[in-house]
Image 1: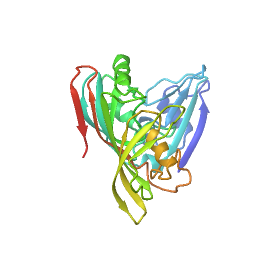
Image 2: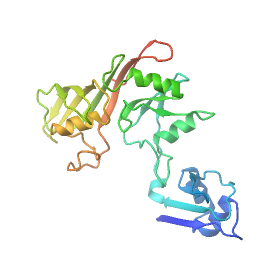
Image 3: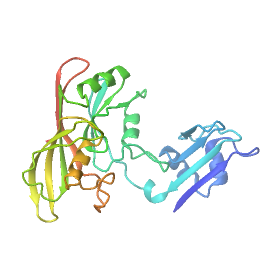
Image 4: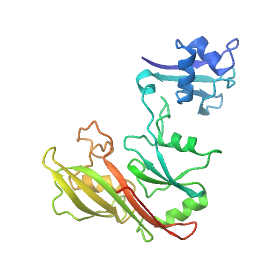
Length: 272
């Protein structure tokens, strides 16, 4: 069952969110509360500002629009768990499982990495994504929790060259990469270099498992480099459009090392 509806709060309507929904949507009160908690109900105020409504007793105002996105199959999914590896206060290090979306959608965010992070910290913290990391990948992720730390990390992972850091990814790619050990190919008018090593090749289903070390940090560098060489990463929907797969992106950050921008200490994290 799926509901995709936009309702306007009118004079005479209940002005408590859950009461308004019960009066206007053909779902039980318990299902509506579950939908709100999981991020599938939105409010749009008269200035056009849009936000999720999670609390059942939230006030709604005449003239606001209430958006309802309900999909029972989606809501029945068991949320994946992101593992907090280390909390350093100014930043945190995580292990994000494969197939866990980075952010939610109109239909909810309960299974997203962003929501998992939000629920982990009380009070909530600011989060800054580091542009050098591919957050669509699974595995190790770093979140900065202040602008100062994010800026320091941007220098550690400077796009032109990683001088105080090393990232080690592992990917499943289509085809046999053979003896290919480096891709040096300009992207977005920037120099971009990736080193790689074949872990193994499986004739069936014609895939290679590849270790990857980006030496620069151009956006989506790994997937674009491999696709340009004819070895698209399995599950890559952004660049390998011709490669049919029902799998998520088969790219995982398995090891990282860097100088801590807060303490200057050498840090290393590994999943292998």
